[in-house]
Structure formats: structure tokens, C-alpha cells
Amino acid sequence: MPSLIKPSTRAFYKTWKAQPNHRLSQLLHGLFYSSFPYFYIGFGIGTHPLRKRVAFLEPLLNRLFPPHPMRSSEHGLSQASHTHADGYHGKVLPLNTARELISVKEPIRKPDLEQVIPYTQARAILQQDPDHIAVMDCPCRAYKEDPCLPMDVCLIIGEPFASFIIEHQPKHSRWITQTEAIRILEQEDQRGHVHHAFFKEAMLDRFYAICNCCECCCGAIKFHSMGTPMLVSSGYLAVIEETECIACGTCIDTCQFHALSLDETGAFAVVDYEACMGCGICVGQCSQQAIELVLEPAKGVPLIVDS
Image (cartoon, rainbow, N blue to C red; front, side, top):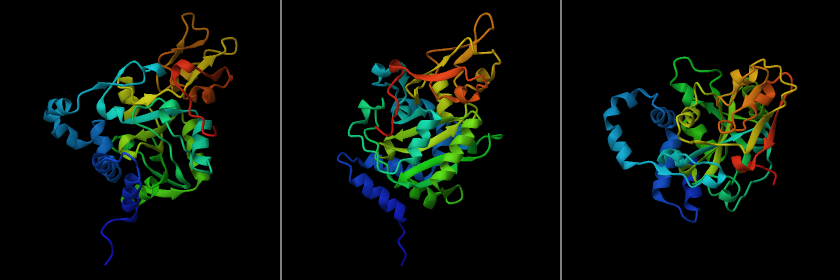
């Protein structure tokens, strides 16, 4: 008789069990999140139809899961973080870093992630079997009436996560090669969409996905713009060479974080230091090559894969 439990579910359980401080709540949360990502994310960002029906429970949910401060002020984060955002962080990535995460040929091991990337819950990156990459339809776009296309832009990387998504969401996911994954990154970058490396407490405190999304669809960007810091800066800052800028406004139109505007005279673009997340989309969109990304220690520590 065939097993009722899928192989990827058993692999998820074994990986969870091998953690030094594994908790049952983390296992149940991770299995639910991975098994029903469209319900989970759609409900969380308020686009799932059921969310409106249970709106009367909002005060109760807020009492059960009150906001609490994020322990990352030393990395330039001073805003308060809501509970579910505190365990679900995305680090904004420039295109080259996103490529490296997909192309790495051996496991990435970091004994204490908080010294490398300013996340509260994430403690380690342990990417097993990096050749195992799945792409799935973006849950944030799934419930939009007119979502940005294409839909299949969320990259699930490494095990047991990639196999879990393939087995539990066969209609919305497929296996892809590293070459295909990099092509998706580059095409989304050309569309002006931001790359995020995602870590979630329920996903075994590990890096598990690269999301490629936009302000109009992405729940994380929307929450971030409303004051809940679900995204952490890449550690870089966009800098404009004023003498090269022709004030065409392309970078302003494509910035997903509204961090660019024209100066008072309208002669060149300027960067809002606080709003800039260092995604680098404006760099690729600038026809004059007037923008570059520079390291900015006050914006956080960059994810440097090969070190």
C-alpha cells in the first residue's frame, strides 16, 4: 500500500528534527505554509476572499499576536515589526547577488546569520542540493484581478523546499534548471521588478526562495511601504552622478520604493536615503549609466555569497 505521506513531507520532517532547537510549532507552521502558500499569503495580505468574511476577528488576532519591536536597530532598522513579519523576512538583492544564489555549486553554511544579515529569526543559510530549483506561480499575483505577468516568477531553491512545492503544488510549479532560473531573474530585472531572498522562521530558519515582484502585486513591498519592515535593505545605496543625469525620469517611474525624484530645479534625479533599498533596478534602467550602487554600512550588511 502506498504511503499516505509524501516523500518531501518526510524529508521536511527529518530536516526539522535534525535542528538543535526544533519546535513542534515551527514544524506545523512550516508544513501549513508550504502546503497552502496561496491561501496563506493571500489571507495574510488581505486579497483572499475569506479574509473579508472573517474581518470581525481582526481585533482578536491582534490581541493574540501583538506587534513587537525588531532587534535590528544596529543595522538601520528603527521601525516596529509585526509578529508575522518578524519571522518572514526578505532581503533585497541586486541582480548579480541573485544570480550567485542560484549558481552556487556547494552548500552555503553560516554559523550565525545575524552577524552576516540582520534578521531576527534566521540563524543559518544551509542550501542543500542547489541544483534543485523549482519555479512557482507568484502567490501575491494569484489573487489579483489584473496581475503583472508572467505568473511563474517565484524561485524555490534547495531541499527539502523545492521537492515539497513540486509535490504539493503540481499545478502551480515545475522543475527548472539553473540556466532557466537565471533567465527568469534577468527578465524580471528588465521589467523593473525587485529580487528578494526570503527567510522564514517556519521554513527552518533558512534561505528558501527568491521572489521577483513589484509594488502593485507584492505583499511584502506593500507591507513595507505601510510601515511594517518586511524587507531589509541590500546593504547598498543608489548614487546618482548629477553631471550624467538628463532628468528623463525613467528611474523615478521604475523605482518600486519611491526613493527617487527630481531635484528642486528639475535638472537631475536625487535619492531619498531612507527609502532606497539598494535593489539596483534603477541602475539597469538608466540609459545614461548615471546611477551606481555603493556599499552603505548604515543600510545593513550585504549578502556576499562567495565569502
